[in-house]
Length: 136
Image 1: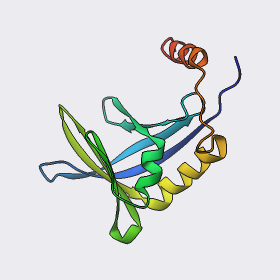
Image 2: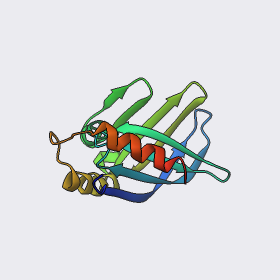
Image 3: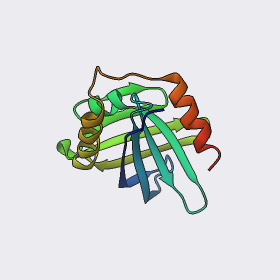
Image 4: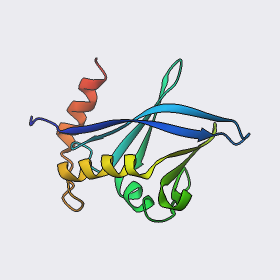
């Protein structure tokens, strides 16, 4: 098995619930070359963590224009200084905003690891990594 390369970055997300409640959450953006199409957004709550998988190309496109449908929608905000990501599930929805620069730096770092068009998935390595992470 070859060594995996990953990129992580802590971010602060300004959040708004459908009821209008506003708060700030800490989250971690995570990318691994074993799964080069996905970015994990890990929300760190007071009692547990919630992880969403977001398509990396969708995040890249969302830096410049409104994209997505269904569970995840992304669009530039505040004159392009921020990016809004809306997450929806059967349990509810959450609208988050983060600085465009923070997301842009993270995505640039992922592109240094795996360029667009160079994505490859070794199913055996991915499965082994998933199984290993479940035993920690």
